[in-house]
Image 1 (tube, rainbow, N blue to C red):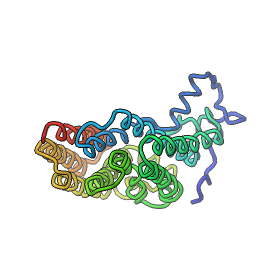
Image 2: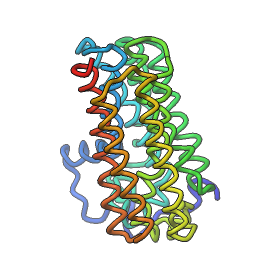
Image 3: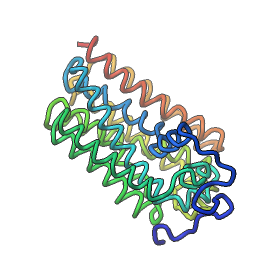
Length: 313
């Protein structure tokens, strides 16, 4: 399927691209541009960045470096998310979950959204290069390019493995955080990258179970919408098993102590129990509970890593 082959839903748009009855105010326009960046996703990505910087420093890095890295990472992720909305505005109009996005309602013109997105990427690269180092800037830009080129433009509409492969972009912030401090890579950030890579499928597929009909309507082959639900949940279980193993491998690789080790084991057991429970009773309500816990899981896991660095030595 060619990108952009589906027309926008005309009933939602007025001539000139503005939604019927839309009152444009400076606050609403700013809010629409902020919405383009998908701030909730950015927040989740940054949750993993600061603890990784603490691990790389074996203590608290310079606050200015943390601020620059968070700013650059947020701008880069926001730009990639905005391009994603630009490309996917046709299918967003077909899915109930995404019909209020700015490019569907007409709050922002597509061309303006694209210019805004590209400007964010340029600024993000400059901020990270000037405030951290070239390696972290290149990694952040490569994550954005991968998310746009591999996931959004290619795999999302063509492969049931779209979020598995494309989700690798969401694992790059740990590499950016580490290199901002060390200006080089090591095995510890590589393992953290694997952790986030393995976390993404059970996290996102839990949400996709709830919205499987949306993905079918938009002809997007997200796994829970194209295979029987028990089969999709079984894959979630196996990814969760691999995830738990990877989190425990980090203990010797990153020289972490008992605080992180116990937290990884307990949180991993809870996550695995949740996916197994979903396999036994795969309902939308259960999938959303698992989705919510998956966010809590990664937040507490990285918080435990941070505490371990400061206390567990």
